[in-house]
Length: 148
Image 1: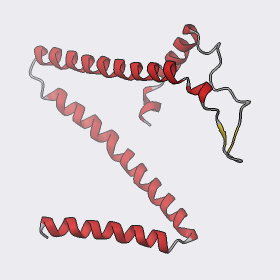
Image 2: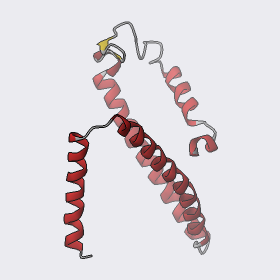
Image 3: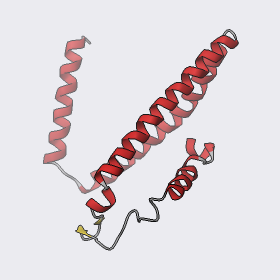
Image 4: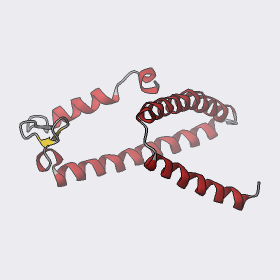
């Protein structure tokens, strides 16, 4: 099949699928879609972990000497530190600038009304010690649980 025809058929199939979902809703479709979504995501999890593991092993086996390992290790640590610094900066700017725990009260999911009695973060939780304990509690987890 030629590339141009494949793109056209793909677009037509997407529009047809959307139209059928809008015009022919069925009560069993939610269950079927939940099953399909669960199967798809679990299949991805099943494939991704061995793929990452074997790609890491393959990359390590291709290293020729300690200078390659030193260069790769320093690049990896530098990349990790840079992306972590960017993520922390974005998080601190959003929390310090927007104050999401005071500006937006949480919603009560059953009545979709604003529940003003719930406080997401209190003044005690914003202390540096509490923040450090929370960060360490989230960082130091079982690596196998994190992979699972």
